[in-house]
Amino acid sequence: MAQVMDPTAGPAARLDPPTPCRVLLLEDSGMDADLVREHLLMIDDHAFDIHRVDTRQDFIDAIAGGGPFDLILSDFDLPDFDGMSALAIARDRLPRVPFIFVSGMLGEENAIEALKKGATDYVVKLRMERLQVVVRRALVEARDRNELADKRTALAESEARLRFALEAGRLGSWELTLATNRLRVSSICAANLGLSDPSEIPTYDRLLERVHPEDREHQKAMVRQAVTSGSPLDMEYRTIWPDGSVHWVQVRGRAVYDKDGMATGLAGVSLNITERKKAEERQLLLLEELNHRVKNTLAMVQSIAKQTLRATPSVEAFPDAFQSRLRALAQAHDLLTRRHWQGASLSEIAALTLEPHVDAGRVRVGGPPVNLTTGVAVSLHLAFHELATNAAKYGALSAENGRVDLNWEIAQLGQMPTREGAGPIVSGQFARSGAGALVLRWQESGGPPVVPPTRRGFGSRLIERGLAHELEGDVALAFDPAGVRCRLVIPLSSRVSPQ
Amino acid sequence: MTDADLSNLTVLIVEDEPLIAMSLEDALIDQGVTCLGPAGSVSAALEMIEAGGFDIALLDVNLRGERVDAVADRLAGAGIPFIFTTGHGAEGLPDAHRTRPVIGKPFRDIDITDALARHRPR
Image (cartoon, rainbow over all chains, first blue to last red; front, side, top):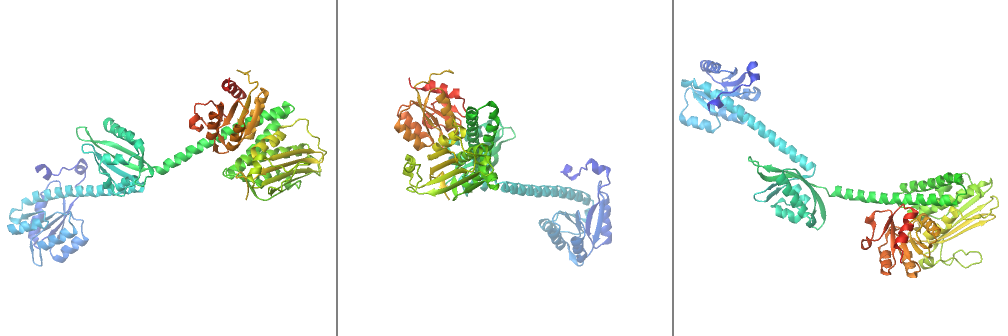
């Protein structure tokens, strides 16, 4: 106790004069008050600032308004007041401040009663020399007690902040005791496993039952490794909720050791990462789809290059023809991207190529609303591009008064247009569909007389072979001297549908 | 294998992208191959297999968003060899046919002609 009673002042305290200790002294006798003051002055390393009161009201006022006090010294018997009432008031208002009775006469019973009620100590005036020891000890103990209380408050606040952070971050916390396999989990941790009650997983084995069977061995291995190697635990596993749904959990933790360095447990946090996992899966799918689309586009570019090279009369003519087709392909991609690759309407596709000519009054476009899937939209766009390029070079759009009419309608089976002299055009596929067809006509007029090409170029081939195959329809491309005509009869389907 | 012997060979082309199908046709016709198709959908491909008259098939693994497992099954059942063409990796292949030859898109003409020469029925 000697060490505890001897307050060790830090180096800083030795350099500065000690902060005076504020004492509230309840004493009606001036002589006794002086006696107390003298004894206090004899205490080393402490200075005292004494505030004396001698009535009940002054005492109450001092407690209410004065201070802060580091110490209360009180007589036991006062003319209008008594020490026990003063003690009750002090304990109520200033529970942390040491309260010492300094009294001429204090029977053993009173002393015991006073200590029970919260007095720190007592000194009888006949043995006033004890005051030094008692005050020192009271001050040291109060300081220690206050420090402890401050730490407890700080710890409680820190815990509250931690709990708030865990809850805000939807982080569950858990603790595993290795010797017993007992598991303590927070309610968020249980919720991550689809459980409302943390007591449903009281042991590690019960937790494992909740882990997806395919992930169980991995889970056990990772936990074992964290315990034996001391490396942090950081893993993701699937869990099956009571309703059968599968969710993802991430756990992070670390082994806990005793003073001999033996691992006694594992503690950490858990997080529901199902949404993140789903987003990752979506992203992966998207990347795969993108890869597929890019490869397909590269293959298309390659085909366009090869076929353009075959069809162009000279190497010099190649770059222009190739680049113009690449540009057309890029335009289609732009439009489809704006439509989130959900397809496009026929009029949008027609406008992509023909809008400048429509604005110039050279092309008329018209027909009912028709929806196209992405593949059909790209093919039709490339076909329109070929027809328009040809018209601008050799056909109606190369002459001042030339015109192009592009129109379409939905025709029912039986009202199908006929080829000159032949019966109705009904391909095998198409006769079965029975849902009618999109009949689309490109008609040039007012241009120079059309000379049929000596060999079929890329455009003709794309329209007559590619388009006909892709749309499972009938294509008639005619180099009529009065103007190029093209008619597509495309059976309606999920790929080509009226709005 | 640049001058792989592809004479007297008839190939069914199953491909939904007309530009790619046309380019395949060009390459094969140059080598004296007879081409059937292109079939651009699973149902069209099944019809053409039913009709027969070809030695080997080039099979795109995805036709307008539809998987070609049924087409591969039918070809395998009929004992007709086939070669996958795909823009996906090997993951996109039908599970039952993972050991079949695969050519990734975009491909060189020589990749196609070599594969046809190697896998054509003897």
